[in-house]
Length: 60
Image 1 (cartoon, one colour):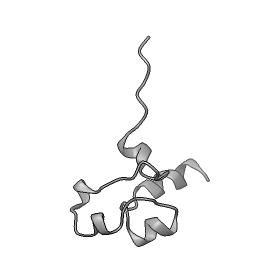
Image 2: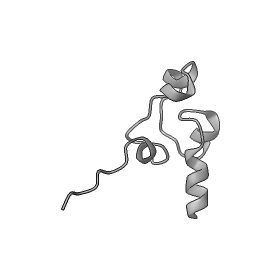
Image 3: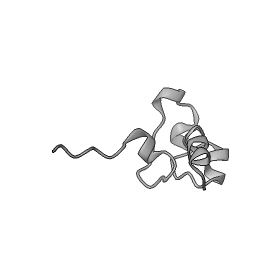
Image 4: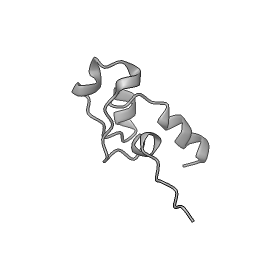
């Protein structure tokens, strides 16, 4: 998978049918009626988890 494909996958709405077909593990029913800026993201989702919760950088 290329870097561009990874970016395109993150544009998918968490829990949407298209995202689920690509491997999204975010909840479907919880996100169904939620506005786009309030979606629930699963820690098991390899597509969306890093987008919303990137690793903290170590301080030197």
